[in-house]
Length: 128
Image (cartoon, rainbow, N blue to C red; front, side, top):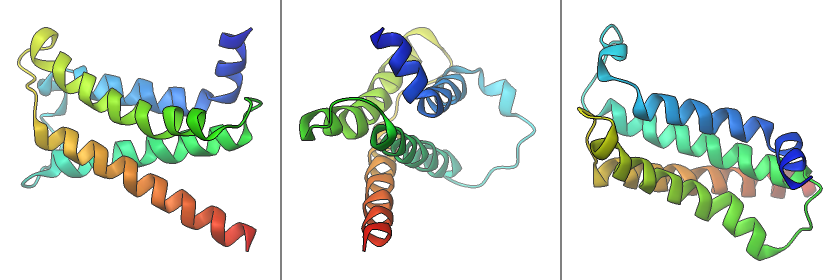
């Protein structure tokens, strides 16, 4: 029942997680035709994780879960930051030639924080 509720309440977030995992573990050759600029991957990391945080917060607010501060922080902040770190650890171990980067994880963390700040401001404005 818990899994069914999670799928029902968090389907948008789960789709974003699946996209992030695909992009993070795909072979670099899949992205050969995409125009790039210096450090564009940091921007992509930032945007992916900002989007994930926004989706998680939105899904959490609309979920049927018992609302608590601890659950909110675990789902909306700790989970996406941990996901970014785990992805960085797994990339060089199982998805060579992908490599780990502290700066990628930092971009993930900053994206989560930006997503959280965006939603905080949005909900504050909507409730004002």
